[in-house]
Length: 211
Image (cartoon, rainbow, N blue to C red):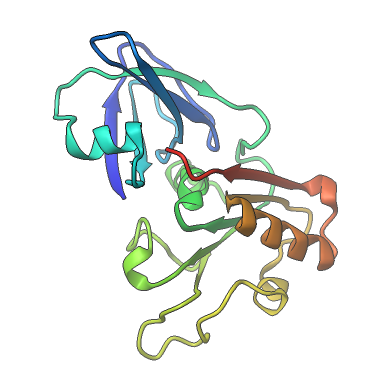
């Protein structure tokens, strides 16, 4: 995955959890569009940060990783989204799988940048330390779950997120935000409901294989 910081021509403030649509247009008029979550904390809307995973045969992600250069123009629409968003006023319990952590990091960054003391906890699940997005940014408010390979001396054995992992981390009266692949999102959201979290308090965002 790579990080891209885009300067916007006009102020477009976003709310943590929103996304933008990046569209490419070929000389023959062919277009390809993909949605990407915003990783940066809200600001004055003059720039945003995206983290994009390079997928095999991905038209837009391939172009961003291999062809785009500093200063190149990109067509960006948005920000979009009004449901999977966090305004910083209520407790938030965040669960992200792989690159699904991107919109949740926007929430985490917003909490820090704004100096908020509202309770927030992030659980991020990745295969190995090498796959951890935003490594180095996480603090006591974050729990990392490695599913295949753990660092030496890691207190938890490698494996999927389970009820025993989530149970002691749950926050009272929190809205839960779950983001990741369809399989991850289904598994994590089902665990939360089984642990007693009201289904109406669980917001889920899934992403597909095309990007």
